[in-house]
Length: 363
Image (cartoon, rainbow, N blue to C red; front, side):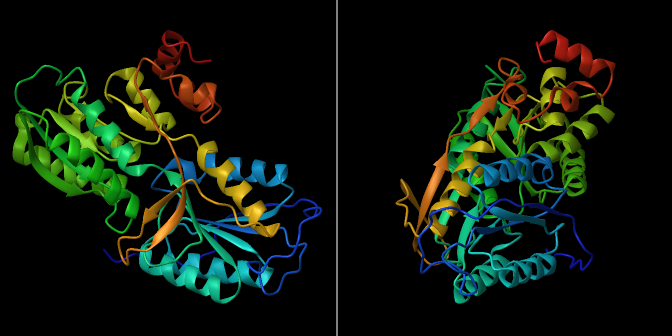
């Protein structure tokens, strides 16, 4: 799908701190920097696919930059690969020694990372692996396990548990996102081998609420009551599915999955319209990635605990992979307790969410 190129300015959050004390020179730092370079650029993808890119990640990254006394610029491309490429150029000119990238697609992401390396900047793939980019490190979650957890949790939803036959449809994430491929690999491995489960349709929601709504409307129109479960890749798209089900009086009667533990997703779990979400604490990525950046700028060459394979060329990328958590009504308050979401964002939407928060002890 062609991505609309947007040339409008985007919001920039900047955290300034004092120079990193006592760091040694590194051949990996920017060619325009000195041994005291403490500049890190962060390129986030959009504001629509997940709330995390607007709030959770920028907040946690900024806090960690302050901890490690790094001067960080955080840019959001607002869904435009052209904007992200321009932002990368700005970070190079600014003198960034490390740039953390969440790509919009591997093609534009690889171009960014190849340019970074040619300028002596160390690229880190953050959350998404950029195929063919050649990043020095990859910091993310075990995304195949995320998908496996989604598949297992879906089979345990009350709407389908114990059924001898279950018809389900899928709404996957964007085909340009390597994570979406890994999620699908995980949940397809589980659901494809689940006795009595039949996949009726597989659609691409493109991480878009609007697209997911259209896809599911078509699926529901075609298969109707044969659909017992919807394997939808994240909370943003799950909300669209739930909206369609509500219009048909089916919300809560069909098992719906999710991911990201967003405020809306937690509300839907408490309301019984969404069975679960997948919680990926930002600290598991941001804290590791910013510490890694500080080590690189200090001239160190950290040894990652794992590697992942770039499917485009078979190369091994040093990787730090965190473990996800399934969120159901049993632990729905955990993301708020951890500070990933605020009680206000989850509870203060309306009287129903306030009552549900009281019921599940969220305050």
